[in-house]
Length: 511
Image (cartoon, rainbow, N blue to C red; front, side):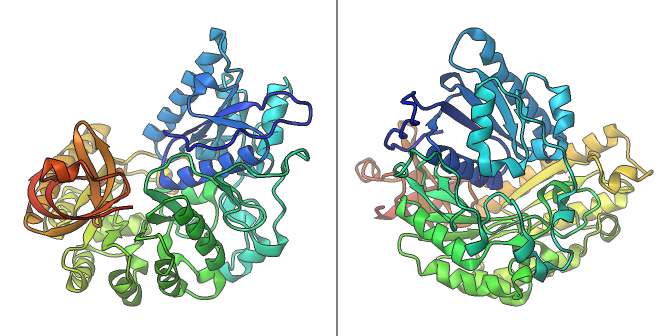
């Protein structure tokens, strides 16, 4: 992680050096945004942000609580940071925040005494005070979890007025002011009030792409998913807040904004306009400096034709469809509390490609869901074989605490789940390689993300950040030497290697 240059934070009134804090982020792009909010709040409150935990007095780990592997990674990271405390270095405390902390709270604190505090989302507004208390030897009570869906009105249109502390959100004139030390007058460089008086954000990297939170929470009741219980009911950010933050990101050198949420296709329903996203996209497109707009987390059952047309036809919106299929056998989908089937999903993909033949599509799938038959599994294989997806994620089913599926009685043996997951992963690897090979000869626009001794690499419009493959650029070495991170490059695909592409440069639009 590269920290952008900035002025040194203003010291507290006591004259003491500012406390040093490291933010360690795990999980998805939504967590990345939350960490940058925490970074903004801490920088405004006089803390000095450092990159490495061993250089910090206090390490804040933004955890992921999605699936077992993510939980284990979060706990391992907390333990590794806690291990630094006994080595005589600068690290004095470790704090857990994020989804694992919000979901388990006091239980996590009891089972992981190595963490000095476990803080929920409600602590983000006064995170500086909490960290000072911990560094001063004081005790901060562990978060007590509750079902966050119950914190907002059941009716979506009543939620904006009743929303409390939601990471990444602010609510106009009713929002609380940012709490900073009274001795701090000027905000550090690179820090901006991104969405109203309560919200601050500071970038923790300087790459040309950045996530931008569109909404939080989810109203769907998928039987396998616990996310709504700890992320809450669906809540849109106001368009003015999204646009203000996008303009600020453009000022920071960002060329691609990735709109993230738990369910982007629901955007606007709590603001009284389910088609609000279709009007927001052209406004984002009009922002100088933003060249790519990417939308993530689309629910197929909610992807109406007018939104498909807006995604396909709005300038700067890249032809990328991140679709949450999860399965395609109708019986499995019903037990998942979802909708659709193989043929309807194939029709949706065909309608997208009719508008944009080169559109990229990705999805994740759960294998071994309770009651899944061999026929159901074969139906999923049929869908993948015909869908021509650019990226495929495969997960073996596992119980999640508090979900409906946890109580299902027709669970599959773990060996069978593992076998089906391995078979589907092998098929997926073969299919995405075939799809990449189909793109040989295709003209691409590539956003450059890495320039180094190993060459120049970036992503095309059909490739999402970090998970969907990459494009390695080839051509005249003298011309390639002029290419910089953040440039947009026109190229023609000449070769594929698995999911990745090799493309010959034809033109460069420098940052």
